[in-house]
Image (cartoon, rainbow, N blue to C red; front, side, top):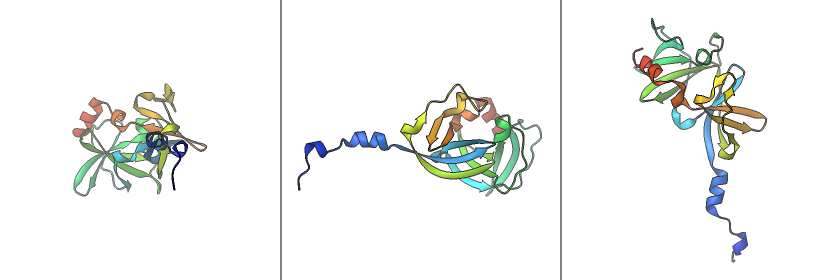
Length: 166
């Protein structure tokens, strides 16, 4: 059985078309966000968060996760949204930024999904009232729009330094 030259497909072309981004998606308020799954260490249920005196406003406190003290950032506060009581859907997404382990409190975690890179658009100047400096792009998935966050840019150097002192 021979393959005609016209039936052959350029493998590089297929790889570009099929490049997928794996994301963890979550909600904060009415918006849905996604972060690269490679940045996520784990997702945990909320637990007792210990308040830290004179911590930055966006820091809810710290938790003890298997012997490590981890600062917890309230994403609602970080995005200037009204605070909300934690409920059965609230989760903490544990990530590493600049060699610091940080937990981000989100309203709920939706799913892990694969999004074709071709479905990601550059961020508009302002998305949902947030500066675009920590937005990688906006992903289109069926009838949903996902705001893709750049976690490395979410906290500036001063904020990261403040977390080391928490």
